[in-house]
View 1 (tube, rainbow, N blue to C red):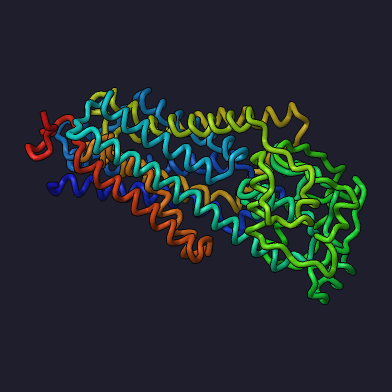
View 2 (view 1 turned 90 degrees about the horizontal axis):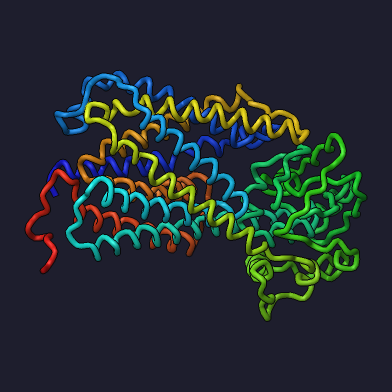
Length: 504
């Protein structure tokens, strides 16, 4: 490959780095401790604001647009285009639908589905719309399959590592709380465990179709002190009536953080949330079964998660699954096939829309391409976000819920930083497209899962042991796919080398 193609590939991986990093500010502990919790719609609003700020700053680089795009045809002045506004709107749609899918499928499954759909969509867009040239179709097909498969492996095992770490923390501190709360979280797997370290116990916190309607609370202060002094994993905390219910989310928040503090009392009457994903029997006989006895053996978290996953999938528990755990998990019901299909469809739609988000740039005049396209992009994203936020607040009002708090002092700067990182990703993809083609640049950007995984490994301890090895295998598949794709796919303006021509 020549220098320009190497530079384009470098831009594509820089885009992947920024895409895999823009959510890191959202993981700041200060944002997780906010009460009431920070709604994702509010954070996305701050992200769009940061994106607009970065787009405004990019106007300074417009005089260098020709050199940056490696084309004498692009313009060096801002030209508003509705195609750019459409691109911003598509990004917002992809983010919103993606959050909806995450609430049903979990982060890992949504990442695997949406990333795969985005890679395939952008590859086909480049071939059919941008007229990118393919020298060996079967090699390109293999490359896309490697990117999709490697991303799925990396995403699923990254989330498996999160789940294992969360369950381990629950085991370590489980004697401070309620064993049934632990079992309910284990049964939900990544879908249930992932959000419980970033939700607080407000009256409207529990997301629908996520938590079970268990009438349980952590132990009282005296019981907790006794449990801390007693090394046995017993559960002596009393069950309370409906008027004293606390959220499992807050139980797990204390367990995740290792804090010994008691959860605050909920203000106002508790809301009963019926969950089709998980219903755990609150029968006292089940609660007083050997699973909660003082002399019982603590069941392995991995075995609990395995058996719970089998039950949720509509299968029987494994043969070696403890009877005590089966009794405590009695009543677990699988997520309805219709609900799962709808969530999967939403995840795929998020990927398809995201894969086409820069597609409208194919239809603008040359003078409006490159960095000149960004301001229109940012205006469209911000305008669509304001409309979506107004609709979100209106729907909450109509449902009788409180208006969401913006937490401007603590959330604004992290949101702006996320928006700037996201805009850097868009800039790098735009600069990569004329050098390596749309069919290569955008699918390569899906290697962002590698960088988000590295953040998790290096700073959050999300993966350990064999999980890291499997994650590395997934990353190698992605890199191999990107290498093949960049070698055998060319922009329409370039000529395919003789050595890469299709055999007759």
